[in-house]
Image 1 (cartoon, one colour):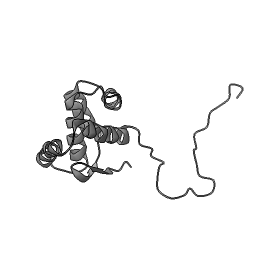
Image 2: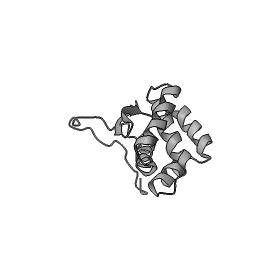
Image 3: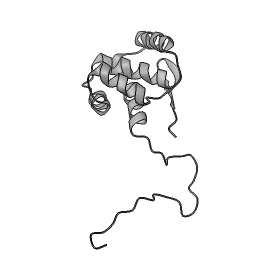
Image 4: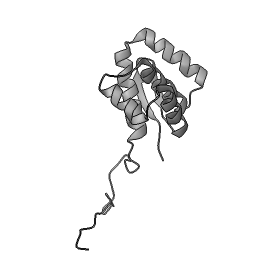
Length: 123
């Protein structure tokens, strides 16, 4: 099961997660797919709503109320540059879109590992 990600950012230390509802809301707010928004963030071609909406919705998905998330994001823009917050937004999207279900803490037991196998064309 996916878990939220604890991130230390200019607004403090909070849990962020974009579940399906938040991802859909983000796509509507940014008028782009979630991966397009992430690409804009990491390539410094973002719009301000890419940054604000990703962080706000990530906080909501992490368990914060909408009102508290909005207040916190507004306050964070008083503390840090939009560029620094864009980095936070990119980390939130990366975690929410590219998580690995098998990525659990600790070592694998003997014989465990990547169970994905490919078939050769001769099989």
